[in-house]
Image (cartoon, rainbow over all chains, first blue to last red; front, side, top):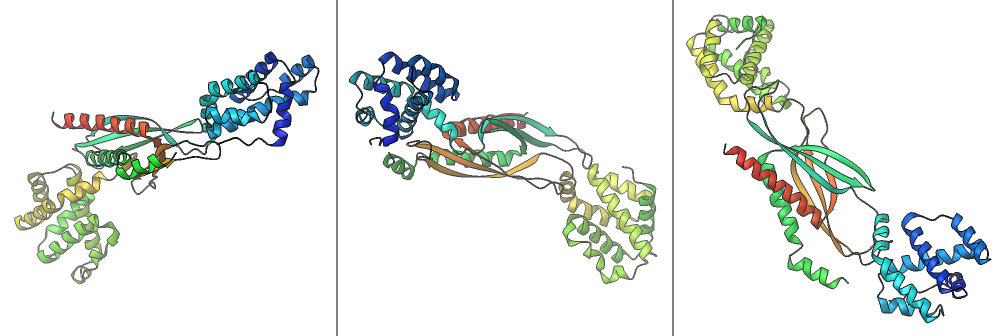
Length: 199
Length: 195
């Protein structure tokens, strides 16, 4: 699958072919850093002064690179497809190699950053448990009631929460049985067939 | 086993065969157990015609006394001899003691279950439901291709607080982690039960 670059995007990136390899690799470094830590517009001004171009040109160059990287990482395009996609930019061979290396080096990390943006349900983080035997209560003395207290830690968008729950031995065994079936389902013929066919 | 003065007085008034025929005593006893164990019936067991002919004060007093006695016996896990001694002290005849004790033994388990359900406790898990999905892509990321589970732990609580089910998602590895910990807990529980 090839990446389709819009005319505007190409225009923004074309500035890079007019500069030296050192400048381009510096731009690449900045683009990757902005993707990881968020952008910092102050850097544009400094770079623009050094290269004696407008700050806007620099910004477009960096953002163009960021967009190129996120789009290719999002689609997880192959090495060959990436090379073919950037061909239309008409960059020198050396610059194309640089971009490819940049893409391959940072693809996984960019994907994990993009993954954080996906809609998030509360998800499992940890489980702590404690085994007690209830011996008496205000309303009833002389009990022997095994109780498993569970503290379930969940996480959503980086926020942790915990719920305290309890259960009895019979239900615990039922839960285990049910969850084992859930895990086993992924190995069933049906699931394996579907997974094999989704590429 | 100790009962308050009012309950003792109520029991004593039940002991008189002249004031309360044995048949009525038996009806009253059954009604008391029935009302305790079926709170949703809203006390309809007392609507029996034969009980209606009783003096309302006597009915109320003795009904309250029987109920108190049953609950206290259940709470203390009283055995037959403890209960008989108490009833003897309230001048019950042996026939009524037998009737009371038989009815008590018959319902003891249910009374204990009722008393055991009173009190505060964390939400009690009763069941789990699950759903398996294969995450293919989203607007930020293509080719995600990861299985993902959505679990709902069904929970219930005493009458006081409404139950809150807990729903969360987890990956296969996380589900394995969760399952491993639950199995550990089950193993500990089994060991503890053999002590």
